[in-house]
Length: 432
Ligand SMILES: *Cc1c(COP(=O)(O)O)cnc(C)c1O
Image 1 (cartoon, helix red, strand yellow):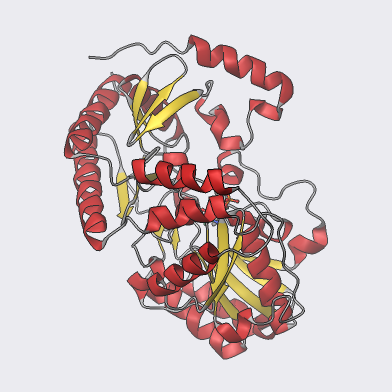
Image 2 (image 1 turned 180 degrees about the horizontal axis):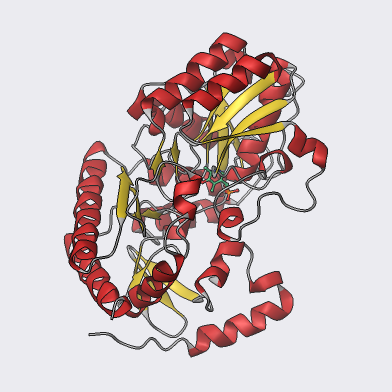
């Protein structure tokens, strides 16, 4: 049933975009450069489907890179946003909505006793790092190779996501001094963490980690690894920061921290917490958060932080999610990844599938996949071929193996079956 996708209008739009924006995009992985093609320009989305400007529709597993857990243009989110818009999109003065969202987040993730809203995940992690440094009066930060925490200077070292996709280890423009204070360690490497803390523990302000890595595909942090981080940071007076920008409300409703029963000192959030609007947040223990301006001296501010529109996006999304939704989404993710693994076996394709909650990845490798080096060894050519075949069969997945795919409450059993069939067809074509 292979249909040839006509992307003429997308191609024209891309040519025009390239004249005025670097690479034609506002975020690099969107450009489809590493899969050797031109991106689809999207006209609209509804529920689990997106439609491009040429009128082709796809089952969407990118979901704006995670935020859209209720799918595109959810009816209740749209209605709430319309109402909020009519009341005014921003005042730069407090609203009761902000407290409502902070309280909701505290109830979902009790380790977050106090919360500050920002406008992106990048801002959340950048602010969390400043807080850790200010609170401990130390400069060094530990991060893990292949974890991505947004694009602030201190964290753009050995990062995942677009950095990994385009093979950039350190971005030009990041002063050496920043990189010097960022110590990097392989993910899931317990011995390396212990050695680093033995040598420099008393200089380390904080450890930032994706408790389930999602920016090199889905790779769960092991219990031993995350427990070691909790133990070493406590022992040396450093702060443990869980970057749950992706995993919050995704790895589980209560975040990856609930799966591992480990409480970080600070948690960063983004993506789902904005329900598709630009939002991030960071929060944690009261005694730490109270050091932020105006109560303390560690500076944080934002013209549009916690604006009513963005906060409404978050509230109307979180309000609609139930434990039952997570059970249903997980069941579909398991069916999907099992189905993909079976198709791979049938066509003799080495493949390792991972899933945690509503996040999943199909790595083109026999595995095991535990860290960044393992992902780098995946078969990029085969991934690329299958990526285009999947599009031709109406399935839109992340255009890089260093990215995670997602599911929403709107994906149906029928979508899952269609997607498994599409993988079968893609594998058949790619191995022909
Ligand atoms: C997406 C992401 C970020 C950055 O968030 P932006 O909103 O893109 O700035 C930070 N950390 C993690 C774990 C992410 O997945």
